[in-house]
Image (cartoon, rainbow, N blue to C red; front, side, top):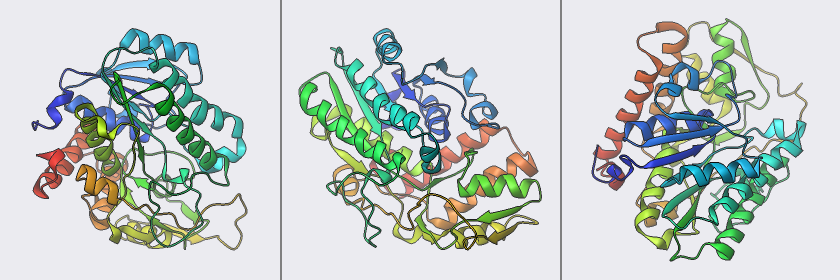
Length: 366
């Protein structure tokens, strides 16, 4: 373990939403760094799940708690008194937000309020990274990246709930958490994350993996939509970097940061699926965009990450081809090859990513 990341060793780290896609990867990474991880989630969101397949329940303190229950959240934080918090718990799917907007707002906005309000009583040091989304921005689909100072909000319930969560965080920081206080808070924004262990509905990688593992055809609603794809470890490294800096420097208190991929990772859904199909036997997909009906989905949304580069000296590590190969390698191991245990595979990818970051001279990996 390097000197920079040794700050987490033997520290109590709370991860909300630890059973979700990002949450499992972050929990494994924190456990790898020697942290005492306490995860809270109301359930395991998918079957199969990375949480179950990695045996995460055996290596962390796993709690069932609904972030919408303000009193349970307050009692939990008062009991645990963590050194670090990564808040990932969310209803994460745009299309689901149209089906159940109330649950989306309760989870994403009220859940954020509940966590922040419970922290008002803290008189011991705690560094908190609140993870929202790239969709917190009011997306007008321009071709350049959104900066942290651009307008918040969006047309769909998910985007609006994340924009509202940002306003909640800003209000609580300015009202209750001074720079010289015990609790320091910052925000991480990211999107278009891919990688092994994601089985959520209506996401392109899980949809392809499920279908192709069963020799079925994948139907693409919008193959021309362009996304700046990034491996799940990219934003997680940004959140980790931000947490460390937040704990040692109060100038980052209250600051939002974008974490996005290298510029050459912008690819259409069709290109992404084509490249995957070249590496998966019997992979077939079809364009159903002319027959697809459903709620509005953006065609383009990308982030400007200059702030993270200049203030944190952070940037993405893996280019598009490496991102895709690591993702496919993970799923091939699960569905086809069974070369190694899922936890070992995931840890090996974390180690490989860290080594690449070290070779690039990124401060957090030294």
